[in-house]
Image (cartoon, rainbow, N blue to C red):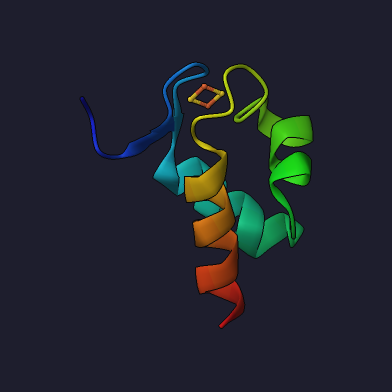
Length: 58
Ligand code: FES
């Protein structure tokens, strides 16, 4: 398993999500799902996306 892939359903990498958080100022996993579909299938990656968002805010 590639640790850099956060959403395995949609093959979305940590890098892509981080870019969205920084450039588009997304503030919730729902926004990430709307933009990339990450988190829109099984939902298993949502806690990790949430964590990335809160890590960027601090
Ligand atoms: S791993 Fe992201 S929706 Fe399934």
